[in-house]
Image 1 (tube, one colour):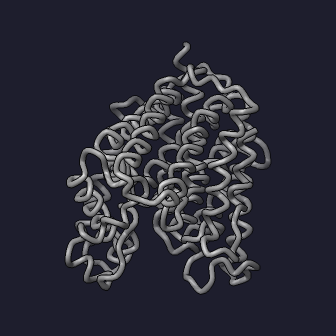
Image 2: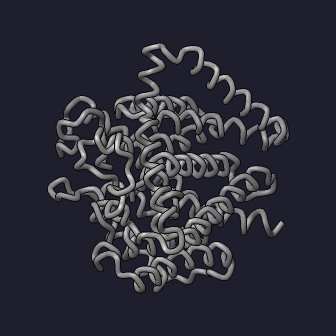
Image 3: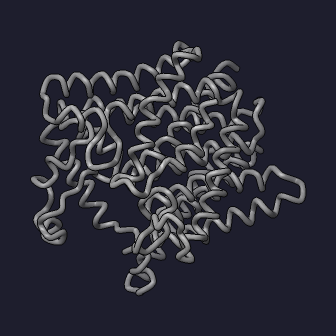
Length: 403
């Protein structure tokens, strides 16, 4: 019952701690998956390709650190800068992918129930935070609600990802609760606006579009060619609107809320580090030690010369910079593989799962993936994203590939 960790991870904070949003969560993901394997039998052979990719990444990180010793034991094992992205949490998170693949077909109802539960908790707690009634004072004096994630961008992203659950239940439900699920889907959007972050809004919109696409594909009314035409039309329309109204104050406000220039500078910094450390990288979660040397002068001056990034705001670039080219290629390989699985299972018409669950799973994977391209890791979001990845892998191997 590994999915019982979902609400536990959501609530695993202590506002009195300096590092309140990651310490307990990092401990859980580092300890529970290995313990689970002691008492439960997991068939790694069935997921040999995925296991090979993930274990090789871990092996390379360990070997490179053993050879170069360019960070302390504590930073390597547990992560630096309060994000909980060290080697031990990474081992636990990778194990969770395989465990989830093994469990999903049997326990998928628990996955969706507990994920919906954290959305419900977020709505309740978010309303309290929005009205300044946070009993834990977790948001402090910061603008935008933060839920239990310690950061408005992460709170916004989590809401955007899990909004797939009420939307899926709306499409599936034919009873009186149908409108209730739709109401919760739009209530999630209102809560996203309360975070003052644009990330969740993008993911919420993407969830709606993906659900429509997946349902059309499943019904046979949309093929890949039509999908490409529709996506291209939407993209061209958005670019045209931005070009026509590029000087509009409203468009400028939207553009600024995405922090495009800052993200671009983060990406460039990570790529410059990778270029100079292409073979072995700089070590897991070790970007801050090097990033000051690779920032552009203008960006460094904007930040006051004293602040340096500890992430590149793109997990693909992070893997290339932290572990070198081979680790980066392996990570790209695993996310491309899972994305291919997520698309293929949408086409499969002979499945034991309800259609809305397959579609919600695909939506959650692709919105999580987009989040990793534009933002840093957050251990709760990564935990949920990896459980979703495991679900995709499990459905593909047991429901699609064998047929």
